[in-house]
Length: 239
View 1 (cartoon, helix red, strand yellow):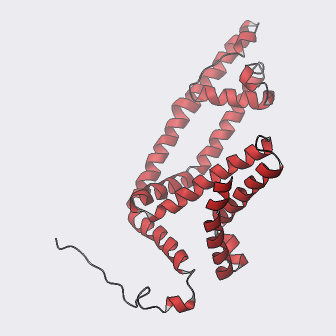
View 2: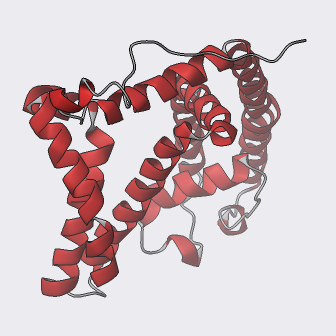
View 3: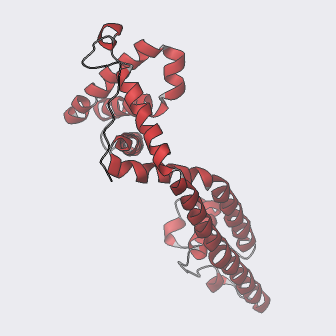
């Protein structure tokens, strides 16, 4: 907890400097990851002190802190050349696949509703989340190849068994064999398009980070000829 508070001091000072420089409107519009990370960090410290370390609220806040820290770390890795390509590609690919993820969720929910007609999953791992989400997660596992058939074991009628296997076969063919391969192909296509423009995109991302850092300097420092020369010297190796 003490280490967490100390580690948050530098980003807190940095973000307060940005807030005073840009103003509230511009800052909160473009720095959501930064201030969310700091607010979540200090909220976690508060929960550990006054709510309890093992409280469910403290655990949820800490999980969110870990997630925000990971996002912040990945975002800052853009400044390093070897990581900048990976981070930029992942961001572009995920943004291209949002529509496909939504469509896949609709498919999973639709098939879970069909399987719910024959019975609800009674597996022990679903008993605390309710039958609705239990069926959704069971359907997701089936679509990904993790097969468990607790529902069919409780079916007594012959036609119910036949209909269950028909729906299962349709779900496997549509979600596993067709749709997931379609997503993989789309990821490859998005990766290829991103790779064509990756170099200017990477330099653009790094320029944004550099501009953000330089914006923290006062006007007096911006006139420093040593730190901010009027000319940029570019060197290239002879071929």
